[in-house]
Image: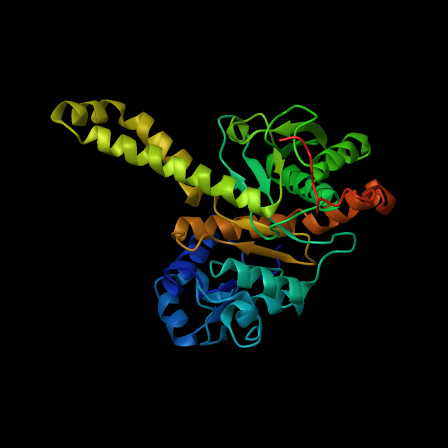
Length: 357
């Protein structure tokens, strides 16, 4: 049985059409049930398809020459949602012409277009951007929000936890994912009022299919002891970029060390299997595909610099969320918690936090 088509913004990302089409073709070689709606310049897409015979019977082209620039303001891009490749890819999901959309373009513009076209799910105030990160354990860790919302109150954080846990059950197979709130310490007195309020609500939400284990500090995110890390988009984006920067620092440091002398080069040859494993583990293309959770539809954000392997992984993420009915899982969990349990006590909205630092 074929999945619903996946709409690809073929013009987005650093490399544009060539890499996006090549990534879709790689995804289809792995799973021949994939079908695509390729949105962008028809002539360029057609030329790219010539190198991928497996895509010819599985793809339809929606011609569009207008592209959202990488540095374009979301408000400006939003006004061109009906004429750009990104906007038309998202709109295909809204109109039922595709089951999911994948874009490597401007993140802010993609969020704005997705939210306007698809709207948030009932019971969700704000969508959140979630991504998989590698760990030392057997599981990847899901972290959200990574930049969709610079601020989040207790109610938002509880909703993020529910959405992240539903996503985690799909990708990790755990019945009750281990959920933590990102904080500056693990003690109950640490953090803002909104964090403590969210923690209280999650501790009392025993009907949910998640295991709330309190707070986690940023240095423990990748240890493999956590399945879902919940935070606001400001803190999450900073933490994510710090993790990515550290990974690049380690790989560059090793590269410099192994090329510093003849002895080092010989040592590299001896240790090459281990260094290749490290390189594979830290390669962001192997974990590519951030998801906008909380929308009435599936939208996946590929990294702008992703190669074909990274794009293929983003496509696979979209397909898996369609197969496993992510939106239905989130809806079920929201119903289990109940709207009354998501109400925040007066004064605990997080606007004037005075919590212990």
